[in-house]
Length: 264
Image (cartoon, rainbow, N blue to C red; front, side, top):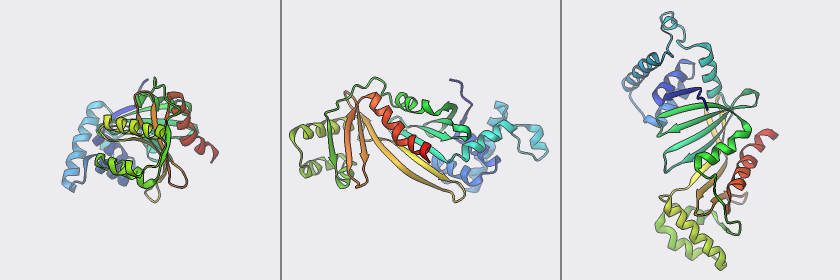
């Protein structure tokens, strides 16, 4: 698959700023690089400009005429990237990678792969390809699943899962039949094998005018020895835990994160 753009965080900050979105550029920069002084940001900007010139992205002639030193196609690309009304974001905490899908006009999507909060790579894709890319990103393609493994946690019990030392207390709170307790133990083993972290997928609605992003859907997940654990809140804030195979996980991605957008 041919990428549309590959750049560093610093370069992306410069491109977004040049296209007239300074607050968005600052947000991108601070989320990856932390807060900096004005002098430090100027140094970052200058270094990124030199890299863009080296890549042939920076139009020296336009810059000398006090114009935006980017071609029209790149400016339109940045505009669509920033103004995307919906974003699907999946995060692999242990690998320090993120995969985001930005909704574009004309039912197109922009896939945005971020490595170590430094390298950004962009690809144009179709909506029907999203769930399969999520599977590949999380390395779930061959997961078989154990459909009989399912149980429910309260919101408080789920919160206790955030720390390994809470497991004995959490287990004492559970009132489950033996088969569900076995499934719970297997979930704990999976979390422990994953450095005590859960991966997640979220749907973000973007309000660019008010500079506010709202997460409207979240699905937690983690690989097991035979499938994928899915942990999902319901309207009563209970967390339903199921072990599924790859196809079921893919269908869940589509029904949770894509169908609502189609129906609006």
